[in-house]
Image (cartoon, rainbow, N blue to C red; front, top):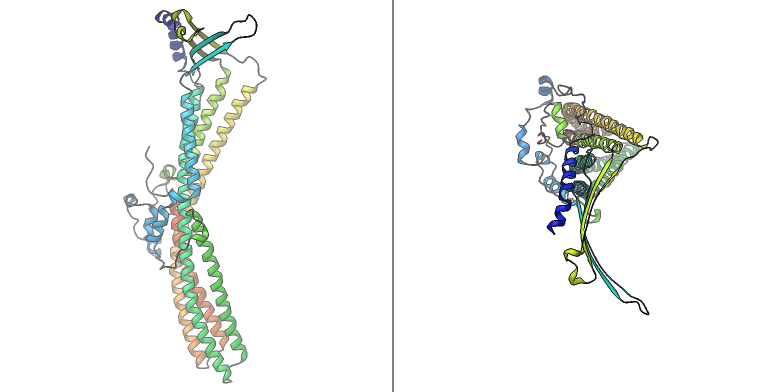
Length: 477
C-alpha cells in the first residue's frame, strides 16, 4: 500500500502547492459600501420654541429601550401581549424565517464547493452462459476524490455572494417582523379609537333621543312646527347610522388583528376596553445612525455586496479552470482476494479547460453583472433617500399633530358650551331648532375630531419608530 501511495504522493503535493499559490488570485472587484447623501441633522426636528408650544418634553434616554421592546413604551398590557406573539404566529414572519433558513443552507452548500469531493464505489457482478461458458464473478471497490482549486476566486465569490444574501435575508426577516408589529399596533389603536368614538356616539344618541322627545312634546302641545320634529328624527337616525358604520369598522380591524396573530377571524374576539391615550417621546438621534438601524437599508446594501461578488464569478470565466482527480481501487474474481496488493489499481488525473471563442458571451455576462451591481447601488441609494424622507415626514407630523390636538381640545370644549347654551335657549323658546341641530352637529364633529387627533398622534409615533428602524440603537458590527 505504501508503495502505491508514494507513487502519486509527490505529484499530488506539487499540484496542491501550485493550486494554493494560484488561489490567492481573485478577479472580484474590491467591495466598498456605496456613498449616500447624509444630512448632518433632521430638518423637521422641532426647535426649543416648537417643543414648548407643542408641549414636548425631553426625550427618554436611549437605554430605556433595552428594558423592553418598543411597543411597551405605549404602556398597554393587551398590546404587549399580542405583539410578543407576532414572532411565533404571524405567517409573513414565518415565511421570512423560512427564507432565512434557505439562505443559510445555500451558504453551507457554497462553502462545501471549496473542499474535495470523496466518493466510495463498490460492485459485484457474476456472468455466465449456456454450453461450455463458465460462470465468472468480479468484485470491485474504489475510492476516488476530485477537487477544483479556486484559482481565480470564483468559488470564494460564490461563498461571498451567499453570505451577503444571507445577511440580506436576515435584514428582511427583521423588516418583516417590524412591519407586522407596527401594523398590529396601528390596527390595535385604531380599534380602540372606534371604541372611544362609539362611546361618544352612544352618549350622543341618548342626548338626541331626549331632545327628540322634548321636541315631540312641544309639537304635541302646538308650540313647535312639525319640521322641528322631523329634524330631530333625522338627526337621531343619522347618529344611529354612524354607530353601525363604527361597528363595521371595528369588525374589520378586529379581523385584521386576527390575521396578524395567525388566527382565524371567526375564532378571535377583542373585547372593548379603556383606551390608554399615551404618546411616548421618541429620540431620533442623528441621520447617520439610521443607516445602521433600518433593516431595509441593511438588506439593500447587502444586495449590492452580493451583486459585486457576481462580477467576480462572471470574470472568472475568462481564465482556465483546473480539476484534480485521483482514485485507488481493487478488483478481483473473489471477495477474499479483493484487497490483495496485486489487485490494486490507482489513477491520478489533471484536467484543464479554457474557452477559446464564445462570440462575446463571457463579456456580455460580465457586462450584465456590472449593470446588475449598478442597479443594486441605485436601489440602495433610493432606499436611503426614502428612509430619510420617511423620518422627516413623521417628525413633521409629530410636531404638527401635537399642536393640532391642543387646538382640537379647545374647539371641542367651546362647541360643547355652545350646544348647551343653544339647547337651553331653545327650551326657553328663544332660538329655532335648526340652530340647535347645527350646534349639536358641530359639537359631535369636534369631539370625534379630537379622538381622531389622539389616535393620529399614536399611529404617527408608531410610524416614526418604524422609520427609525424599530429602536434607538445601532446594530453591532
